[in-house]
Image: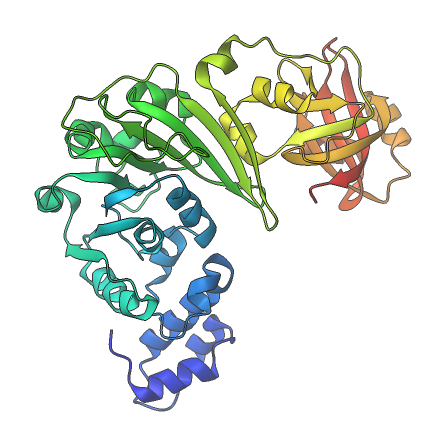
Length: 420
């Protein structure tokens, strides 16, 4: 992408302006390429929060809006790269190149493969700006370049989750490329296959579709679930040479082999925030066979798991790791008398327990000027409960409609303690 000097000056002068307003009032200078200028201004504004390192680097060129929306954030890209090591990798879902750039720091050499020529050109230019010199860029679909890369330690794939009509899809069979069709071929060409999927994916159905999976990472950022990663390996790859902190790292050794069926994959739920990464880890079999810890009575504190744990569904591991008890089998809230400030989620102090009766409960909580309302295993939705209680939305209090182990429907009135 070539940007002339008048366009560069316009971009710099309007870097913080509203793009929609700029589009309505374009530059009167005919030398300013408004389409390019608006794309660069919008992209850099998006990068400020999503890709702070790229935002801080002068000269980065940004793609169209859809590619900026679809690319990984710096946080999730760095997390993926932290799981792997080795000599070589191939990213068959190049896009804007954020994941490729993160992997390039961990491997000696790599390949970026992308069907869109414009994105390939942008990444090539950005590689110069970011001083990335160990990545080969290939323009074309995955199928055309499988034979060009030879064997690598890691193949990374983020299948497109839009159909031919541009509608969002979730299941692997509906994505492009269809991983279920290409899985065997991909695994025969790498030691580890990492697949990024939608946060809406059915984890357990996907494990049935991908029995070669040895680890699943559910990744949230600041409380919002962003992606679910499936790591698959061939059966001849040993644990020797893998990094201690993540026994799911890529091995740099191994000969040709066959695909394997991993009976007991590791399940990891991680929430990356500004200060640390809250993490819960178990295995599928351990989670299935561990009896749930159900609360016989409410403790002083209420614990709400973060989005990663909720998606992973590893509540028995959570209960054991943090010594908290579940309110009921189908109520995904926890309680304990002890304060667990490191709990992966939000922590509340239980101030009152209201047996749910429409008018009675509304009167009992009428002292609250406003409240945040949530429900878990409750007959009403949060909005329906808000109407019944006649409370405005706000943070003067926190109300949870839920069902206890003895079947009672209650509204828990809480005050905040941590993770807000």
